Amino acid sequence: MKHRKKLSVAVLLFLACLSLSIYGRSLWHPIYVFVVGGRTVQEAVDQFQKNAESRLRPHFHTAQINFPPQELTLIGLKEEKQLELWAKNDEGWKLIHTYPILAASGSAGPKLREGDRQVPEGMYRIAGLNPNSSYHLSMKLNYPNRIDRHYAELEGRTEPGSNIFIQGKDLSIGCLAMGDSAIEELFVLVHLVGMQNVNILIAPHDVRKRSLFPVPESLPKWTTKLYESIETEFKSYDKSAQGVQIDFVSSADDSVLGNRRAFSRTYGATNRPR
Image (cartoon, rainbow, N blue to C red; front, side, top):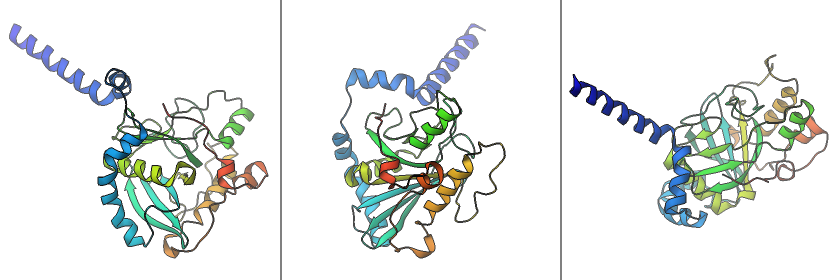
């Protein structure tokens, strides 16, 4: 009996440690980095660039886009669980590669508050690169952007949430978990292109296959204007007409706030990663 009890305790301890190592990375990994020391963005790029480039270059060669390109757009499709990589050179936008999203919580609809487990929807920028992420590597989005903050203020939502990342591993609460190999490629590529030259577009599903309308009545009324702007942005990324040069200019200011500005001015990155 005592032997069985000891064995049961050992099994429980093992399972607890295993669960902590997998699901509790955000708790113990920062301590680990503090003790052993972190790495810089450049050190992470130096570590992963050779292998990442060897995997990326064939995709760019097939698309006939120079590596590294002038500009990037990452399109996140929540329902399809896909992240499309588009690149732009003088000849226009072309689809380079489609990555599977290994984990993403929530459902269709914009993120509204801290803890709602939602992946945001709209147009964003990369706010920073985190080479010491609890999830291998990560890239922080500038959520909440100006549009998110505007409607949060109008609706009296004081905590719209923060710390939304495109990251490695396969765990997520409101982030896009891509796995380690994919995030290495994206991290290196974003560094080479420059964060200021990277656009992020996140939609509830692929609007090139199915419209976002009618908008579910359960979503805020302003979601209609948000979805109009998302559908407009998707016109720049037509898989059947690759190579057509269309500037990534956001219509969100026209439809939501009434001022026409370029994407970079409307959704400029202001925050830093954890």
